[in-house]
Length: 305
Image (tube, rainbow, N blue to C red):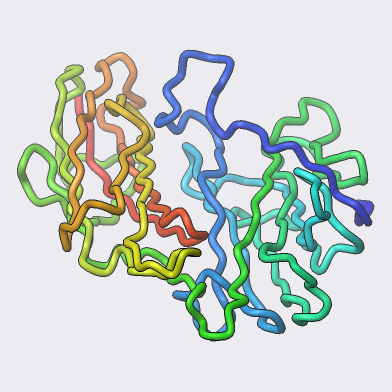
């Protein structure tokens, strides 16, 4: 692996662009988001100059822990360039486990200059060997396949702390499936029947899902014009089988509800699409606050013949 001095990375679509597979369907290994946690304050996503932070990718696949090879680097972005870095990387890590991650220390105020973000880039390979060079990121070798990642990490630089950002808190988020409470329950994916999960037949029937977010899912922050605003939330919905009515929902800043809610539908798969007599289906929710914060939760059900 060559550690690059200047990384130029194209952000590839994380969905199956060239196919008819819905973006909400987990049919292979995918990168669903990037989470940043400040060292010593994991709920804060915006490190300050001189602080250390941990960056991890949210990766999902049909297997609970997909086998991956990956490489990530972080740098100060070059002024005026979409995907280039100024100078040497501040951090570089590669690995083979299921959670690509990177440790970094934010440069000092003087070293940052006018930069308000750091740039995280890299490659996650399902097959092949990750390679980062000045020319870009790719997976190499026979049958190489993977996803490149490019993410601008917001920094907190205001002296009064007004630009610090907390992660969305999903601790009190609740789900209902067909108006019945849907709690998080662990289950054996090899055979889910009778394990306490909601069970539904593989009959292509549509089911209603309601998600009620907790009271701490978003925060008030100070805009650039010094006015106060609620965060906008983007909810990304994913399923490992069947089909969701949409991939995204939004909670607008003008929504004043303490516990915003969204509704969507999930259609059960056909019986012939099942793997075995019963199949565990995972519903994954990723919430972004559009300021660098992200959180993930999931629910599971059992589809039976």
